[in-house]
Image 1: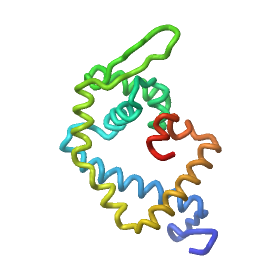
Image 2: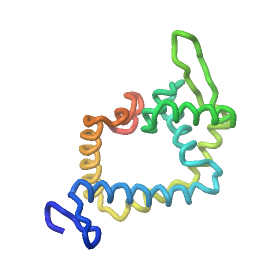
Image 3: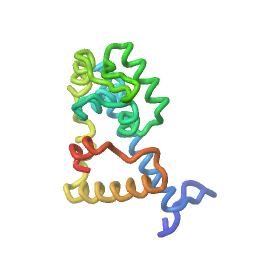
Length: 170
């Protein structure tokens, strides 16, 4: 592969950006598959665990819009997921009025499910351990820079609401 193109097959040439995007996507998918397999015994899906984690990390009643932002999903998809999770007893509504948006909190059932989903949480660290500390720092810096550019180019949302961004070193 030269500096400006990569080869995927006999007649398929891609730009550096397309190659890196494909590499990032396939790497993400592989890591997510490993994490899903690790989480199977908990009985909690990745998506539900992500919502539960977001509510716990925010540490306060959280709006549908904020959860959609954290998950990088559109409002309607997030709203439907949250309705299902409310029926399952993982989350509850609080403080609904015409002047304030609907806010959600973690229930004891949801907190217990979150704890189950986090009981086994080593696979991502095991995967990333193949990088030296310097390589991890470099990768983090590169990904942060690319994420900022993607947000500027029209990503659905900024990565995280301010209260959560500060907890995640962002």
